[in-house]
Length: 130
Image (cartoon, rainbow, N blue to C red; front, side, top):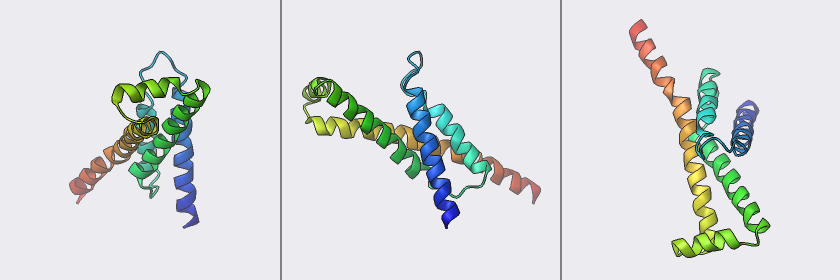
C-alpha cells in the first residue's frame, strides 16, 4: 500500500514539474507539456505502476493552472481575469476554475493516453503468443 502511494506521489510531482518547466518555454505552444506528460504515462506503464492515470494527471494539471492563474490574478491586481470574466460574462472565480479545468483535462488525457497507448500493444502481443 505504501509503495502505491509513493508511486502516485512521484508521478504527481513529476507531472507538476513538467508543466511548470514547460510554462517557461515561450517558443512552444501552450499545450506542449502534454507530450512529456504522455511520455511519463508510458514510462509508468512500462514500470508496471498501478496508478489512476487520468486522476493524477487531472489533479496535477488543475493544481498548476489554477495556482498560476491565481498568482497572475494577484500580481496584476485582478485586471486580466476581471476582463476575461467580462468577456465571457462569468465571475472571476469561474474563470479561474475554467482555466484549471482546461489544464486538468489536457494533462489528465495526456497521462492517460501515454499510460494506455502501450497497454493495448502488450495485450495484442500476448494474444499472438498464445
